Image 1 (tube, helix red, strand yellow):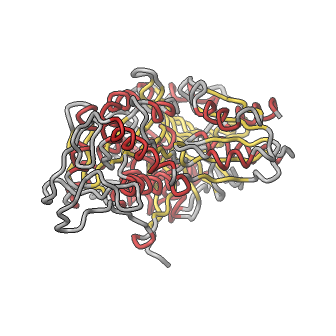
Image 2: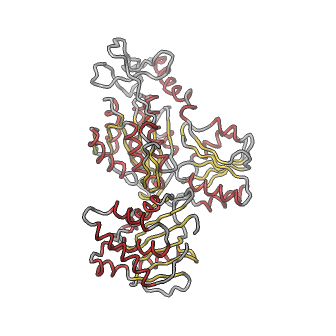
Length: 184
Length: 379
């Protein structure tokens, strides 16, 4: 595993991607690593494409912004079209099933994150948690123990079980769609 | 093991945590991006500890109320960004001349005018030094990380209290808005300085007479029983206005001198690999992070490059920079403006080393690669 991983979570405003980024960063800290989380503010953050960025490192993190990401999550077509060029050529792409693409460059995992949240878990608002579960299962970028702790620290009281279930569904999605673990 | 908390925290949040650790009890301001979280968190936390938060009608009033809070004896702070920093300047001059300790946070965004509200900048560096009219003492600190934001906010309060003067914390949108891991020191590891107060019952107390042999007068709180007058006019030791040439001259020279003779206590910086450096990158704030990354990359390429990170930007680290250029003949100053702090570096260096500048004003951070490219160009 590389000592520093840079992750870009993208989708549309309201999908909870900034919270998703914060949770990933907090999980990394629970694992004893360094983490930096940043996001874009302003008009770009409202509607259209929205993104959150996380850098996780076992070393000191100097430059806090993500340029070319090791992992890109895209939950919407607009986000995919806008940010695909910011993924490293050997980077990992996780896209929702609704995204159309003819990408042959990247390692791609296309999974139904949004419909799993809406239909299986029953709340579309937990798509961010499903997504970070999938990222964990695919990349092992943080441990499951740390991620679960970080999720429970952040979600509103009374929604713990719902969010735990969302995390599990995120893990399962990857197990169902790939037998491989990707090393980033 | 000390009772230290490790958590993910935003720069603006760390600023409030630092202020509270330093003893802030009063915040007045007018929320402005990208400093808004500071006001929000103060509004939440100050009432819980018996402090006061006031949202004022505008930036000017925010500064005025901050001064008032401090005069009443409370450690006071306000936060703003470029457009508000401009508006506060008149009252900042008042605080400097009337010797009222307070902390002003400027989370810099791209200007001039309302500019790019959500984009980082280091465009207020010269305004911090010269924004208010007349000669006046200036202390300005510039953190590069969330932890430094915590530490330097405490330091800002300590310096304000110790020298009875307004102190600026020049944050930028990069550091103010990023979240990163921070280990918060335990309470007993934090040094907190309180303003010197007059002895109880001191009938000879004068609010503008320094302690014997010193340059800073003790400061009574309004309502404590000591009477004193506060004015933005030149004043005598009671605080009463005067046109007297000698009194005016002595006053202004004293408030400048109280900073000048204490620069060693005020100036903070960090250096990396400067000993054998052919070129030193001198940086501050969020840009210092890019600079550090660039210096590491340059070293990997075998280039002899060092880093000088200025944590105190005003007063400038004049003595140390002069020492450094006896060995290193090239200095590069990257900053998010079209050439501000580089002017101070050029003044210090006075032609004894080659000074280059890398400026950026498109609202984006300077990348390590941009600094590295510039290093290779000038080396």
